[in-house]
Length: 271
Image (cartoon, rainbow, N blue to C red):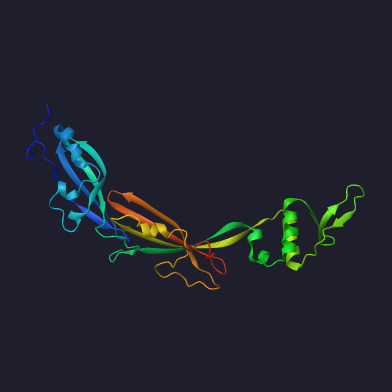
């Protein structure tokens, strides 16, 4: 026989002491709260803890402004002696807009990060390769495809005649830089490490990415915040836009990637 529980009315959900809320550096709030019910009321009470329920619907004493935006995102429960069940609730929210017409909202609290990585690129994308003559690039392309060979002893490219084993040079004279590429191609080196600089903006709020933000993806644009000022004709391209949701709290990340010298191709990467 279940013990009598004093102070509980049938179907009552009792908020427990200890409500606490923490704000992230991007402006979102995460709160923890606990509620007690009689075990006999579990079947009817559990629906009150559905994801998306406003926390103040369960505890009207939640202080302002949290009462207007904190919504349940996670719930766990435990049963203790005395036939009580405790619901441990995580509630999230913000009460502010991340964006207004494609720009940051007035109350947004963005954070920024600069990161640099080295990424493999084909040697044919190297700036020095672009300065070679068309004939040199054609000859080096044939070397890459295995149609001709490179001979170090006289720094020429060509092939051996099968009938006489005679070396027949290709009819292109390679300059100093072209020869450097030829040596590397012959040694199997076809890529190089190129730095990629990424500027990241992170925000939290009660709204998702706007159409203006999504439409800017893949376009040349100026990052918000205070990124390093690029030189050498470099500029930025919005290369990533992602959003995740926890309860009613949306987390948005935007990334801009710095170009090589002379900037991103404006013909391709502008509207």
